[in-house]
Amino acid sequence: MDPDQGDYSSSLSCELRIIKAKNIDHIMKSSSSSAGVVLFVRCYLSAGNNTRVVRLETHETGIPSKSDGDHSMITWNSTFSLDCSGAQESINRLTKGSAVVFELRRRSSFPPLIGRIQGSKLIGRGEVPWKNVVESADMEIEQWVVMILAGREYDEDVEAAACSADSNQHSRMW
Image 1 (cartoon, rainbow, N blue to C red):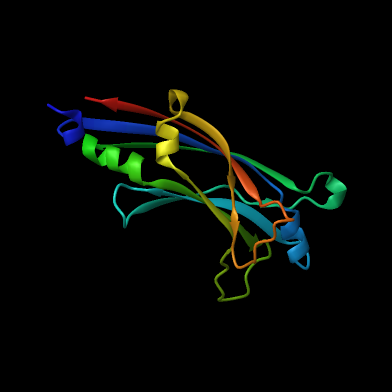
Image 2: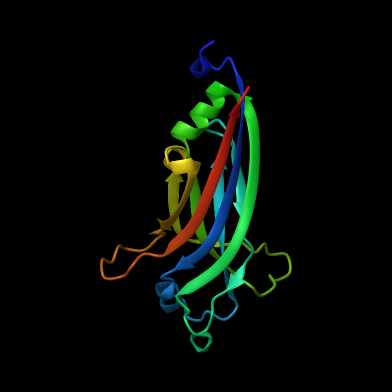
């Protein structure tokens, strides 16, 4: 049997760790006040086809004030473990054509007004193709994911916000 034909069952285990974000000074400048604002990272992972995704979120953290020292860096150290199994063909399709999407988001930490739903606002978005993880040494990768800022014009003098992510995966075929 040819493993590329999908005749084998396969499993994929992945550990994804959101470490920290840097260069968030422009967020502080664009906001009238960082008081009452929390940041978090939302990740989207493909669930094997183009319509289903898994959504993960880090815990929320406040923006450090200037008196706290370096307010351009935020640390989360959130870890997510995922296990999936299926036909080898499905696993191949997932790892070759999909990406992990990272969104840096902000939300007010104040309670919402009565009857109002409190949403979040997208600050920036970036992605890492699964192919980068699969083709890396020991199927492990740690990299900064540059965020494309939402709703803002590009300014080459401003360094883009970035999230550091660490991922490793183990694959097994039977």
